[in-house]
Length: 308
Ligand code: NAP
Image (cartoon, rainbow, N blue to C red; front, top):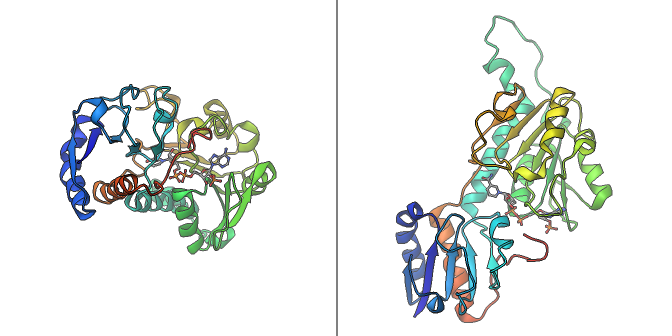
């Protein structure tokens, strides 16, 4: 019998219980799944922030902590975590992110606001350029960044991707390293941030790098708030930067009165770019438990040193 503890916000349990049970059954697992268990009996912990488990030290027999979230900055820095940690790669979550990023990129590319908001009797002539004439930089070419880069490339955008290791993605000019970052950002009309929040990515988009973008560029950040130096972003928006569409923030919910709320060149969305989808994510969790039990390598293991 495999003992699986579900430790996430209590309101998620009714959503997850039945899909997890179905997914475990499909994998032929003999299991006990509950929201409470004596720690030493637990074999696997399904984890999301704001659940009951914060101290992982008593879970001495746990074979892995399985995150429901793709971003693991809150758990990877927990000093009591000694168990292997797997992040969430869920094709439902990826699909949602591709839709959100594509929608917001097209908004800026097509200049939709001028026609949606500006119903002011002015006949604004001039079609937007073609996507092939717009440079898009996607920072982070992991599960989400690669899928978004591919989709944007399929629309003919001139897509440049950047990651720690050099990637090969069809239709996307891939870069890595400092010089690669400059090559990706230089003159970009649209910037999409899909990097994790780690010490190496904090404030990556500072005043200098925001200055490498094309005048009028749009920054789209569904990654994490700390990727951008907020003060530098506000200063850039007072200058040549065209717009910032921000889904994630250093403090969430974004406090009322934060300058982003009222800024005419900022769109705030409340961390809804995408989310883990219960059914597809349950399959990922079940597969990792099957692997753990069978002694096979776990999927989506987090590199503790790199922080993602
Ligand atoms: P992932 O598969 O781990 O990919 C991360 C990418 O970032 C990889 O390409 C990695 O490079 C690159 N990277 C990491 N550190 C770097 C550095 N210092 N310099 C250059 N590149 C670096 O993650 P994912 O699943 O695509 O998710 C990305 C992020 O999206 C998550 O961490 C989370 O913060 C965010 N997210 C947001 C939402 C939302 O609703 N807003 C939802 C889900 C996720 P390598 O490929 O070389 O390792």
